[in-house]
Length: 225
Image 1 (spheres, rainbow, N blue to C red):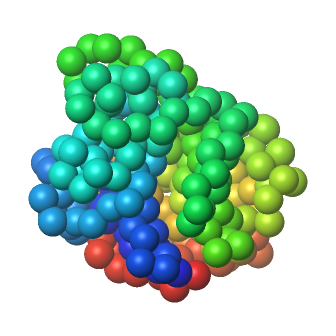
Image 2 (cartoon, one colour):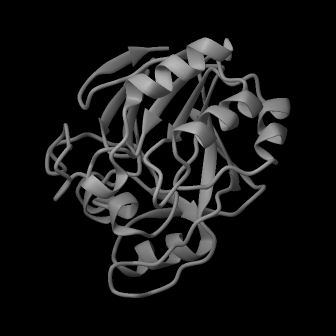
């Protein structure tokens, strides 16, 4: 299974000929490592409705037929725009032949670029080939991350470190202490000046506390899980 960082908070998980996209903000993303008009998709996970996360999900869904999986309100919005969808909500689980997805909270907002507020943002645990990947979406640190670490032996956690709109480096380190993932990957940083952060600082702090392995990925780099 390959996990590719596409820039900002966007990732692609490839498994057995299937492509799963998470928060595919590509068009207009200065860090984008893929073309939304060409990338393959069989499932698209969206954590919330902000433009830098919903991104190109609707247009990719229309082109590929891949469903957008999101909380009920975001899924309804995407369906109204012509996308295929699979809805769910916090605490729920969606099971597909090639993966399983469980919804968890994220503490943030969820408003589209045209001003429509769409329910509660979420994070996900994606289970593929027996591996568990946590994508935090946009969130602050919150104590119930420990419950996620208790429920899943996480193989990978994708955590924002940019601060300003989400948790920063120190809170992301505290999040990893609660999640206890084998590998942690920083995201949502240095796309714009307001969220500049040094991933090497994050990596050093993870290493100094002995709480898993930090893998810094440049946009376009892949990790074999």
